[in-house]
Image (cartoon, rainbow, N blue to C red; front, side, top):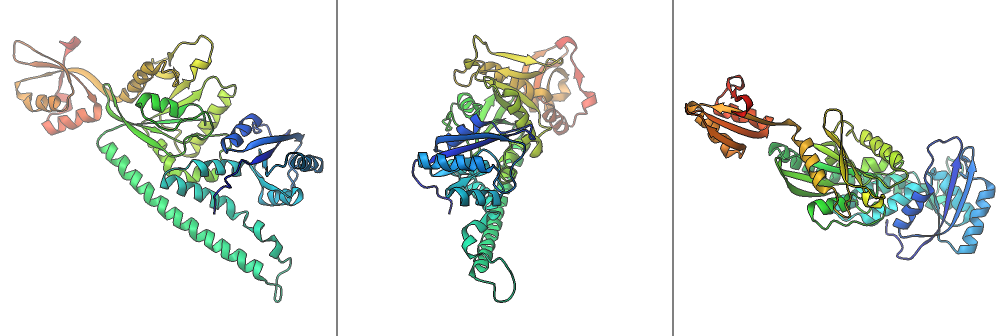
Length: 432
């Protein structure tokens, strides 16, 4: 139902600046979106208005310009860099006699092309069906009835009802399947939490370089390209981090300005990986002129999915595109790393990034020297068994001074297993 025609489509792009709307869409970004969808922009119609026309979104004059552009270029589709209502989309289509798609339709089209996994395809189809449900009338306008009542009900109404029922059934089926996926993900997450394996999730604006960075860190071959939404399906890799041990690194779908709410809803199963992460790496294209606005958009989506309280380390990527810029780590007033400047393309600054991640993930790590007497043999054996002993020295009286490093949760578990009260443990002064 959602296959795209396998032809090089040509598009007329329509962009209007509204004085009543402070946060308008970016035309350059939309052209990149259209390019990512595999469509050639053959003409651009721009203009400005106080507010959208309720019926056609644009004025009659601009509509005429769009008509002329279609005639001159032979365009197949008109793409609006705005969200249109179903009636506006239908009315413009009727006037210009050409297929019309709004910004959400373009994003959905890209997602449909990029989905690779079964789950990704289900999520895209759900978003498409939700979008289509409001536009279902368009195919049956020739059968519409203006009045109701006996003698006026025709096949158009019946067909519309049938389509709506089929849509509802399909949407329900997809929701059920995605619920199973969500439960499987929850089981995986719970298993990782039981094993105390932290998850570090990459988030950021689309095309910020997340996948390139992911590939450089994990030396894996995840698809990465200089285009919007190159990554759609989440990818996870296991990493061994010094002092932390096994860690899961997750690459996620990129965010974008005014990401359609139904897409956020559809991809909730994927984005839950972000909500449950131990640390978020907010990857930022530091060379972009819209850097600050893009960061605000990402924070907004994180808030929408309930991930605003997850600890964040900012990764300012693509420093190779800045003039004479070296990698560095910025810290807050407490000395905690808050931002790392790197290049995923050249690998510059990756060592500093790994160190900063280790520091942030290890914030609850205990690093201390404890004094264990001859009667504490069980605790000593458990510490060695857990691989938590950094150094061990013996005193003349038989006491062992052990330098240990481990998660505080593990420390208290080992004390419990050894039957030792935390208050009874002696700490060595100055490590001796």
